[in-house]
Image (cartoon, rainbow, N blue to C red; front, top):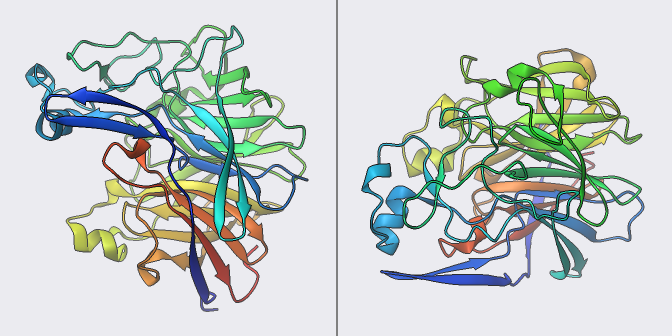
Length: 374
């Protein structure tokens, strides 16, 4: 069967300013992050949704030096994965939003907090080094201390009681978050031994590539299972496939592991037009549970995003059914990372604006299909 036909509508939204930093060659302005993940709470009013922000504004070393004139960073040019956190006071958060006609309205933002009341930060976790935790520095090139409350939040799933599951990349870990934004428990891989966390996840989760931990998260309709997707293949795995886990939502036990095969990198046409691509560029951006053991998977590089349906009950090696590709919708923004269903034939997509530090706007797209896709 051919993919369904669709129409795309961009919904109006105005990014909210968070602050600015004056740098030698310009002013770095940060706006609210919304695009790392979307979710809807069961039973909520139509059009109500929650959006997730990741660890906070960050700059690559070359970007900080060449675009903003930041000095004193030469010693970091050869440090793999090194980034600058210019505004470390901005960390992970959840924002409640409402769709009103053709626009998105902001209602409130909940900064995520530890049980102690301390805010979660975007700092790396203790217990790792530059090969396992992304090295972060301040604007003077000094290393930022590790923080047991650090998180790079990248996916969220809302529950009927008002709480959330949030997935993050550093550990990688899964966090149960209350309706007030407080982390009630945190599951980490065996051996990480993070203070206050439970090492319930398989140790080999630590083989995730740098900055490629958990990126997609969904919950079953009865809330007994979590579906967690890694962003890319593990170190040492075939880069043309990525792991999706089914976990027991009560115990954290790994119930099943599935291999999700990526499309060939050359099939992501907008990315090919922008420059060379390879298998290591392939990513999962989001997961959405749409039925008993059925998921929608947002697969992308940067410019091209595709949405596939998969049935986890059909075997360990997943078969995919194409629902949407942004190569057929040039108006859709790059870097899509959030996806929810508004009805059986409507999806809402959002890009990650990286807190606006490169003047990228948050853009929401309502995609309407000519037949049911969930």
